[in-house]
Image (cartoon, rainbow, N blue to C red):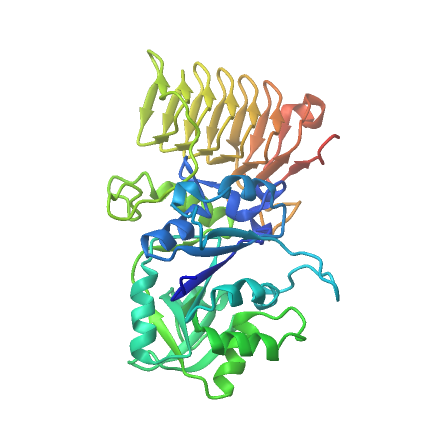
Length: 423
């Protein structure tokens, strides 16, 4: 057996409820990004680019599509005889059967998997961030600091710091204090949810705290280790990192890809982002169609006009349709004459003829003001919008809708039509 220096545990079980109808039928790490990728492709690609070839992917919420996407890990060169990628759902044990309840509890329930490889170090990752990071550089820092645990940190604007766990550290990166989502943060060094632990330290901490309800790294494990005198260090990450946890940040991160000089470059040869790809024909731009400053996926047919948008694969955009500042995922159909501005359409959505999305003035959401707080039209997977209706800003649609559900042909700003499957 080849001993592994470091293995990765990738937490991909989250529902991503702040993405609203986009995650009604799939886990957040399986949501499309950048026209071609899934969010989970980024940490998986980082692993193989960093030389980490053993990755356990912990799934829970609606895992089917994530499992299908990962498969045996071929696109990331993670189909290995020893190591590679392994999907780790919760499973029934003789003594008890329970769902993962907290990030550390999920890792604790997979002690056996980690013990099999007996690594020197364990890298803990989240499956829902967009970034490129060389974990080997972080490991070198961890070793040279002689740390028991190293937390990757990122400097965020101080007014946003209360959304994160923040740390206070000295010039060498040694952490003196933690604050989990503080109301009045005293630091803007935010935890990225990326940790490197010495394996023996992690193993003991997980066993010691196995009975803590909803056991979490940021709230329980790391503060406890710190109190017990373990050396905790902060690794300051300077590259691009985006938590795409809200509809607004998800939309922004996609739009940044189409800047003239994108801050986050998907096309670098030396740090490629890998994904599972279908064999599709090239894009087709019909005579008379226009495409400006956009990403267009394979197999997509454009007969209308697209500007400043990210379009997935196998999408059909009809004649005289106008798409602006929007994200359209795979297999969507936009019929003739439809117009949209600042819309996010999930996979398989059908938009009828002459529909207008994003009309009128912004209004607060009557459905869920925590989730829908942006001037976006968000349409869930396989939803259907009938011909000749208008949809306002900050709205949500899920399901096959009919004309009768749009009073006077309009879904006003701040409103939602949410139908469960089969209704």
